[in-house]
Amino acid sequence: MVLRLTQTEMTYLPKVLVGLKQMEEQYLDICKTNNISNIKLFADNILKLTHQYPIEVVIDYANQLLIQLDCFDIVAIGQSLNGYQSLITQLEEKVP
Image 1 (cartoon, rainbow, N blue to C red):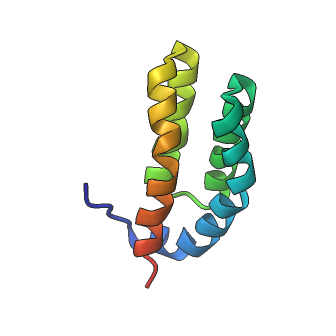
Image 2 (cartoon, rainbow, N blue to C red):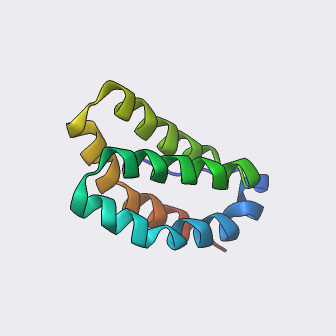
């Protein structure tokens, strides 16, 4: 999958990456505990970040995680969490 960002999203990218990296400790904690409440808080925190700096792929990631939580789809939640580092890597590759 090729990640495409708009010009506006590109201007937000550095701040979004900083915000996502600041959530690293929270991410590592939920990977260890699989606590549903903490996973929801994690997804909500990502959405809060995107309210100020909207990047569609990050919004989609957080919304997908929230939908999976609502459906209690444990396998899909795990897959989404496993994809978090990949999302950050793909975003980092877009930084000029």
